[in-house]
Image (tube, rainbow, N blue to C red; front, side, top):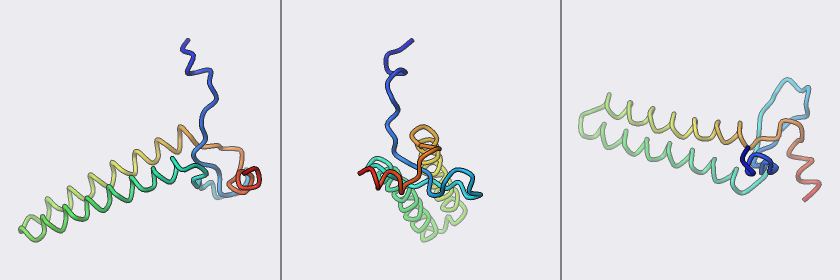
Length: 99
């Protein structure tokens, strides 16, 4: 077994609401979590730019494909990061209280 698997996981995201609340949203508690949101926004922005340029060039459908693909890629990366680096027990308020 790898030594890296025995190390504690670095937490980038925490629950917005306590366990048991019907909403299970996550929010960043580490700069790397905020960076992942930035990557998602950048993917959307580049996709929007590609859409705009394609639409101007008369390739509207190709622009839609570019925008959807880049947005899906950014969302996928964000969801993977939340799944791998998210704390499902503690809330953002608990992390702020301990900071």
